[in-house]
Length: 185
Length: 94
Image (cartoon, rainbow over all chains, first blue to last red):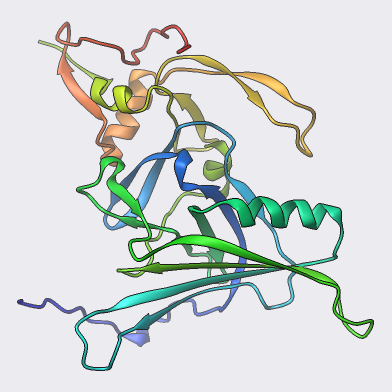
């Protein structure tokens, strides 16, 4: 295969603030189609309204979205990305239990992570122009949430931790939809 | 012959109820299957309420078309058939 690589110059001073600030989550079943412009998801069409829920975790520098490239061995041609998002909410109560149950029950979650540098990256779906709607859910493993409700000890903080795991064949797509646009979907 | 933009009837066959947002300030929610009334769930903004979501206008469809939304197609006036949104709102899907 002829490869076309890309140049990248760190001298361009990209915003490198780490971590994620907050996220929007939905179930993939509610997404009818996406539109891609210059590689970025520029429009989303839904099968119903008000199905994006905002997750605003504690600002304690733990919220993140990581995509770790993995090959079975360093010489393998097979590459996947283990995608992991994390959000931390102080408190352990019935409200947290209801959130945990709702996220734990959903088997094809899509999460828009708003990163510390302002970029918006989407976990749980991959662009696929050949598929109906222009996307498929994560090709290697759908995004699921594993909630943990921790009282911990009196020395620490009781909390709800939401861990989102998926596995992609390509790095996660980005969107330029704003908060207001996502919330209007 | 004049051209107009419509929602691809095949898209509406696959997605008989579909919504999207026309980008802008503020963004505008539109019902691709035609004007309809939705229940907005209870939130910090207030209790559950009913809201009318309009069908997209030609101007709205032009915005989607310019973005490259695949289900917005251009046809000659009078060529259209089937169910689609136009400037004139159509009955809500049941």
